[in-house]
Amino acid sequence: MKKVAIVMGSLSDKPIIQKAADMLTKLHIPFDIRVLSAHRTPEETIEFAKNAREDNYAVILAAAGKAAHLGGVIAAYTTLPVIGIPIKASALDGMDALLSIVQMPAGIPVASVAIDGAVNAALMAAEIFAIYNEDIEKRLIRYRSEMKEDVLNADRELINERI
Ligand code: RP5
View 1 (cartoon, rainbow, N blue to C red):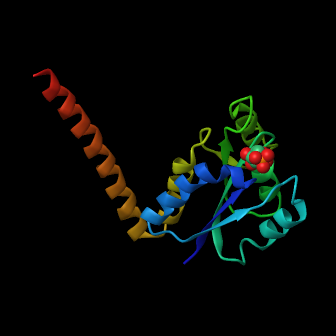
View 2 (view 1 turned 90 degrees about the vertical axis):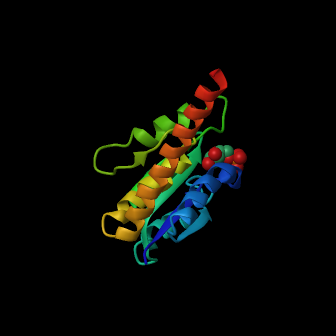
């Protein structure tokens, strides 16, 4: 089975990235986690991106804060889909990373989730896998009905408190 690559620009991004890893684990989707920096380890980042398809990855999640060039650099060296995760890591509260990720020039796309939106990045990767994988689609549907049940329960509890 193909895998997801979760790549982060610094180990300091790990607490957010862990949420993507947990969601992929819940959905039984295999993944690897790497620390690769567009600025501090550019050669290794490019090497990773060039080999990503033959290393059996289908989707790449690229998490970075500040001047978040990681997703863009990876996308320049692979045609696999790259989903950026802007990390809130500076005085600019992640707006810097968000704009760095979404403002890609035409021709080299990088998708983006919300600032610190690691869960949605994992879910988006799962939805891509689910195009051809019914088991993953079923798990996604189950996850949504669990969420729905949680909201309905919270609402019921609030109503009961008022009675
Ligand atoms: C980015 O700079 C990293 O992705 C991280 O979010 C931020 C800060 O990195 P550290 O200085 O904590 O290593 O490249």
